[in-house]
Length: 123
Image (cartoon, rainbow, N blue to C red; front, side, top):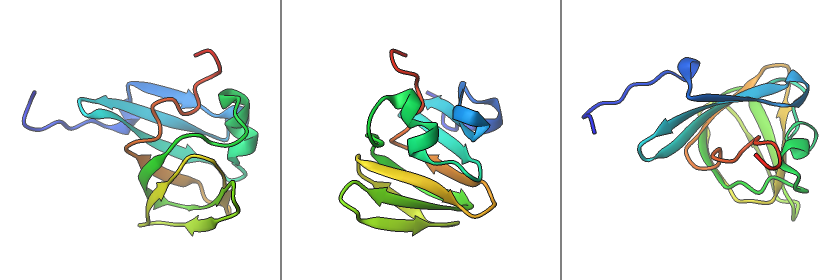
């Protein structure tokens, strides 16, 4: 292991496009586990653009991350909801939908929930 690791998401180990060109996930495989940067384009919604890939009724990933830019609304299956924006830390349990608010892409860096995110069924 080196003392410093510096990687760019622009040269990620893997990029996973979302349905209808509504964004992408750039994934870096770090020694401590995958770290992802997701770019959610205006009009993106989990239930429209990831559900067909995931094959589940709601997002079953637990997310721990940081909102770099843009805004997003997250609604849990039980109705609890929150709006997230630039500078916000987030911890979201499995069982939710989410969508971009406004006309700006929402960029999120996530340390825990993107390992299997946007992987086509059977992938």
